[in-house]
Amino acid sequence: MSDSTQAPAVRPFSKLPSALTAAVLVAVLDQASKWWIVEKLMQPPRIVPLTPFLDLVLVHNRGITFGMFNNGGSLQPLLFTALAIVIAAGLLVWLKGVTRCWVATAIGAILGGAIGNVLDRLRLGAVVDFIDAHIGDWHWPAFNVADSAISVAVVLIAVDALFSAKE
Image (tube, rainbow, N blue to C red; front, side, top):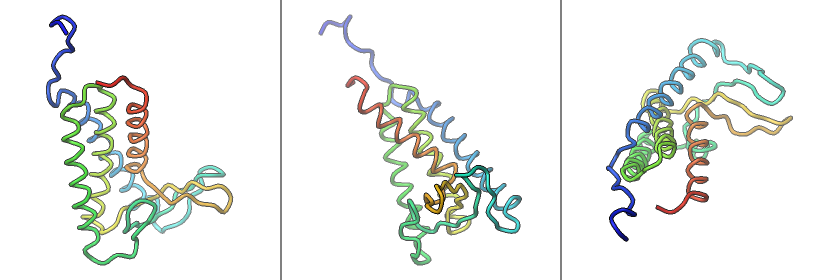
């Protein structure tokens, strides 16, 4: 390839501001929503119907995704926190080479969601979940803002991986 047709060099972490902005925004929204649910709305705990398929509830999830491993011992929050730190470190390594702003933003959203849930584990020993989506008597496991941000970000990254040109 001649010099005129080569792609410009990628500066490591050039999209870091986008990722950090998303991470801070997600973590702050997550923690603020959990504070409001725990301290204001759910005193006393109850079910707050929003729509025919969506309620607000108060759940303390000591496990991981969908409440798996919810009956672990006292070291479990520390184990899940350590796992989140390892995953966050891996995401930061990945972020080093990211060239598209929206992919960096998605990685930041995952980091922010992980931070929000880790803060819960360290403070409360469990993650506060409060969104209950359901159809009739069938309920999706309760989730929170951090979980939502992580899920949307993973879908965006998957779409990017499937449909964007190889770099």
